[in-house]
Structures are given as structure tokens and as C-alpha cells.
Length: 257
Image 1: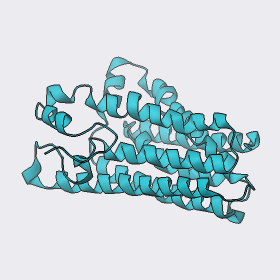
Image 2: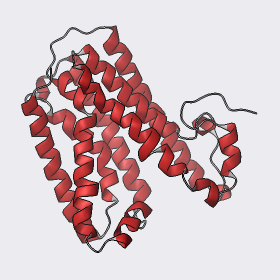
Image 3: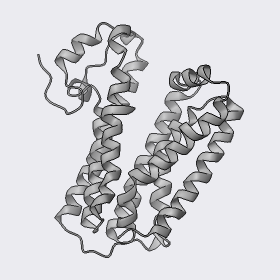
Image 4: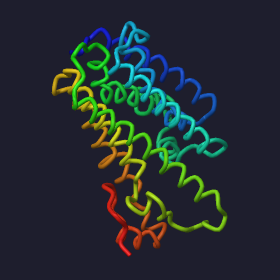
């Protein structure tokens, strides 16, 4: 069961947070800070999905711990990756096309992201208020959630170390988990949300709540993830074509020799 009051409260908290971030972005002239908030925002939702998070049962307690771990790790990773760099090219493009970018960014970047976070997190609201007994569905879901967090973290760390080596300048990362998938970090994220959805099912969430994780999969595969990243990359980096021929885009498989 999903309590509307809990959803509205979390939405209010997230709305306040992203609005404050928007004000900070105006001062910094950098909307990229919205990306850093993506992971931590879900941790905030997990903690505000119940009136008494400190009295959590085992299922909700596991979700709180794992979502907090994932959210903080991702936020710190993006802060480290983006620190000292210019505003992301996506926001620069939006800024160059509109004189009213500050107001547009409030709606199309910050508030939109906040709304998406609440939508994607729908199963968490059922988990936070469930008294259903634990089952194998919960075990499977938590396993997928943990594995997804681990895979995303490993992929990010491997790519960071690869880029830090001057000898790899201009090269395509095709080692480690990046030899199994061109976007292993995104696959890890998708796995994570599949796990949250399954735990939601174990908690008795209505089927429409699975629209949240399904939305995340759609965004990763068709909107802001794989499709957006690879739209022009072959034109800019011809060596990437060989990588495409050898390594699958999303779902991992052993690399071709």
C-alpha cells in the first residue's frame, strides 16, 4: 500500500531541495549540480517515505541502508568527476538557445528531475509502510539491488582509473566490465531499480508502482542514457565504431576476441 500523504511529503521535501539547488546554480552559473543531486535525492526520499524511519522493519531498513549507500556514493563520485570543470554541454546548449535559461532550468532541469525522482521511487513508499512477511521475492530484489550498486561502483572506478592514466588519452575504455558492456554503469543502475521494484512487489506494492522502475529503464535506454551518449560519439571518435562491433550496448556478454 502506498500512502498518498507520504508521497506528498517526500515530494514537498524534494521540491524544496531542488529549488535551493536551482538558486545555487544561478549563483554558480552551472546547472550541472542537478546531476550531483540525483543519487542523494533518492536517499532523501527513502528517509522521508515513512513517518518513523528509525523504527524500520528488516525490509525497509535494508532499503534505507542500500539507498543511502548508493545515493551518497553516486553523489560523491559525480562531485569528484565534475569538480572544477565547465558546465555540462547539455546545459550549455540550453543556455545558448534561450535568454530565459534561469527560469527554464527551474522547470526543465530541477523541478523535472525532482518529479522524476518521486515517480521512479514509487515502490519505496510501499516498502516503507508494509507489514507483509519477507519472502524469496524480497531476497531476489535485495540481491539485484546490491549487485547493481556494486556493478555501477566498479564501472565508475575502473573508468576513473583509466582516464587518470595519460597513456590512455584518446583511447576507448574496453577493459574490465567495460569489455562486457559499453555502459556497465547504466546496466548496474537498471539492475538496482529492478531490485527495488521486486522488493516493492514483496511488500505488496500495487502493480502501477512498477511504473517507477520501468521509467528508469526507459530513461537509461532511450532518453538520457545510452541513446543520448552514443548519438554523435562515432562522428567524434571513429575508433568507437570498432568498440560497438565488439561489445554490446547494454546487457553484458563476454567480449568477442
